[in-house]
Image 1: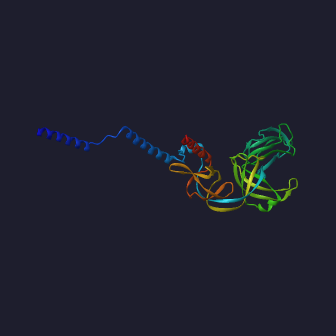
Image 2 (image 1 turned 90 degrees about the vertical axis):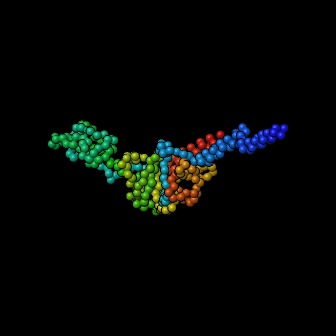
Image 3 (image 1 turned 60 degrees about the horizontal axis):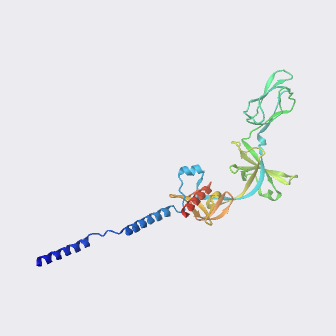
Length: 321
């Protein structure tokens, strides 16, 4: 009897020890709760790293035409807006006539043709010697006028006009109140209706007298035209630089965008573009002074920054759903 009691007591003791040493398996509800909590933490980390930023690869930036520049110093200009028109550079225009009176036997060039200096424009048979001789281009350029046809007498008339259009003039119209502000040597920004057509030149001449018809005075700008983008007769707008003020920090005016009731610049960092709220100062339409929000050397979206804004808007809409 005593042996039996002792055996029962031993079994009870062993059962108690096993329950203390063996780990308890969590319930299914506890497992799900912990798992959900882990997923929530991961989700929070992902949202935090991508919130308010747009990650674009170099290829995407290039394809979208997003221009990248660095925050730095610039000169804010005080300008005078005026209107004008493109004209041939009269110093690079030549009228061409026959050396000797005669009959035009052949004409080889027409209006709009490009010619090289010394190239034959027409052939004339002299009335006196009955010998033919070439009428040649005195300079390289474009035929802008022709008054010659086969079989006609040359007489003393101008047969061709050749213009070198590698440079052109911008004829600016100044009102009397602005005459005192404009001087030879000032820099002028020239633009056309096409936003991509922009140029810069210097004032080379200011007329000493005005035009009675429209009560304006002409200022002339010499403009480079090697790429033949500026066609004579084209109307343009211009901004004459009157003075310049240096500022320590500035960005392109196209870089400024509105986002969540703030004026922002999209700054590019390791995780993509982020909208950085800024405070601006003076501007001349091309540059904007930044007084707060940016540091020198930071890279930002200048041209086509609205594309970055659109991409950020898409991301915000997706998170909203």
